[in-house]
Image 1 (cartoon, rainbow, N blue to C red):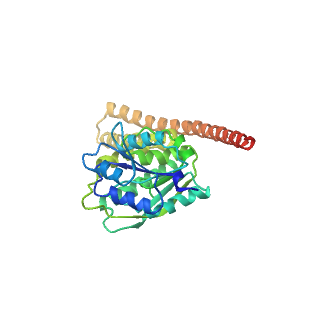
Image 2: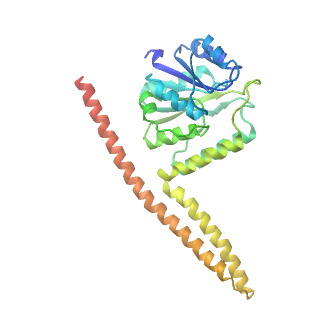
Image 3: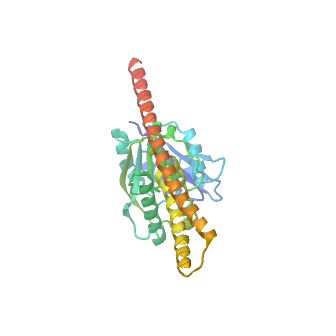
Length: 312
């Protein structure tokens, strides 16, 4: 494999403090095919990237997710390695990312930041939030991955072209992971280093606001992958509300007060909770059958492609 077959994709927004050194580091590792997709930086990010020999494109829209989607339509390299431009990742870890791709054992490789992170690389809130979102993801999709929000990833071209992405913000990492699971991509998690942010590089991530959006994306997309989880949470919420109102009705009844409207509300809430569980079970059956059919179709398509390649 020539390193020209690997495109290093760097989405940026105001990264003048780190982008130049990052590109130099990748070039020193032997990777010259570097694409910087810039989100309309107000500093010298684009000029510095071009000066270091990177190809620079200004994205049409806004947001990290939109930038990645746009870049994926442009890139035709055999492999893509995506890395944040804030200098928190080591270029030398690209070999760790690439190994499972080159071995043919993975379609999507994720770098685990928690394997080796520098003191101060995570704030306490970020560390806690990442752990919570990883657990939520595991419960929702049955895949217990170490770091679903990592910004250092590797893909085969086939995986990149199969993605159906819609999120435009920081939810893109979780969406790519979810879509890989839906598409039966072989996912590998490898240990990488994670560095403390450069003192001149400000974070664009709002831990609470963006964390809530990521959690919402994980929950919302579970509707089509794990309906029992999606409807089950709603069912639990309805039933808990019904139990609370029901307990109040019983306590009032013991005291000689009859609460007819609240009694009706309790019955409605409990019935809705049971219905949510029923919808979840029915939907889970439908999704399971659909998933098996899609796997069969994908396997058939792969067999056809393999036969065509042999004929050629």
